[in-house]
Length: 98
Image (cartoon, rainbow, N blue to C red):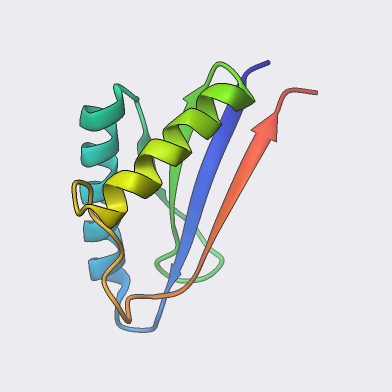
């Protein structure tokens, strides 16, 4: 079952440029490290500067496998982690087809 994974970041006021810079760097790193085709979007309307990274997976198992690798690689500083003080909140969601 196909899965769409989203990571939505809402930056603190004045941190919109840093939030977008980080999201783009993270996208490049995960695409290279895990052979993904993640995309970054900026929300039109809503919280100012909110960014989302979208990734598609063949299954929940494939998403879980990537998440485990990304957690390990984040701890080992192989892929970027969010700079302190940039985001008010970050939410992750997995969407499945109905």
